[in-house]
Image (cartoon, rainbow, N blue to C red; front, side):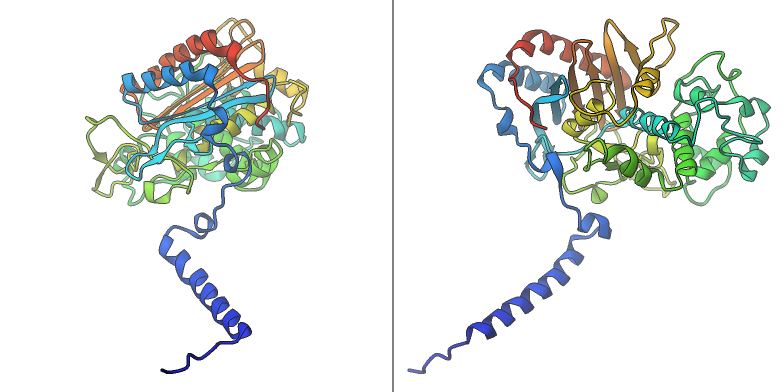
Length: 430
């Protein structure tokens, strides 16, 4: 029998180290995606929270009601967080984050929050105002305007554009209209009309959109405008001196304690590691890809240029971190605000003439502050009540009612709060 050769400990250590180095080099390349997503690591509260932390016997009825609601509306997955006086009391996922991969929804998953992104963008604008770099009365276009660029000026035919202010954009009062289609959701039409070979970037979208006449003089009426919040995103870039996402993370989100919020990508293969899969209803047909490739795609994955929305609707977040963001702009003392009291008052000033608040949909002092969002594959609802309780819901499934589904989410929250508010634990998961 041959005597087995013995390896010294140093030799074994060197061999193991060499194998580890080789694996570190090879394996990332097999995961695909860009470098940022390869090196992505879930941090902060999203890495800590679990569903089990909110498995509370007294709230078994709340769990049941959430699941019943999902079953009624064919929702694959949903996430709920509840905050009171800036303390996170409850955070839980229901159903599937990714049914095909059998990944359950948890409180640490991130989801597209659609037009709730506008609230984040509005906070960025207020921060620039506090830094003395911007005023709500500043003009957007034309001589002395923030976006006084030659290519925009050459495209503008209606001189009323030169009257648009930053506040007009925030309140959807800039005269912008979707009567010829929403520039943010009609990319293929723009490409066909202007004979473009590739999907237009943000600057190209602006250059094409401002050729239209305004629907009304700025400040005299209102019409909801996603395009207006794209302009606000570009204002943040120009005045802040950095790309929109980078500036927002450094000046707004990180100071608020939100470190796992990002701009979404368009396709499933590009999603963040803890991001959910999005779903349409089973009978929703494939649609042409937004970039005129000729391919047919699921509406929530390539039907529109989600990333191109920027501050109008592209952020992904967990409801827990979104709650933390709300706690940082609500004027309460429990969590230090990232904005001054004056800025918070400006954002939440209420008018009975149906004006939009700054970033919020409505800030009725008797009903509470509300922000909604809807995209193909997601619906989002945020409600901060006058007594300091905040409910946040986001789904990963498109509802056939579209934006009107927000009413159903609002009713679910209203009824759930009535039944279970007094059963919530006294604690803080932040």
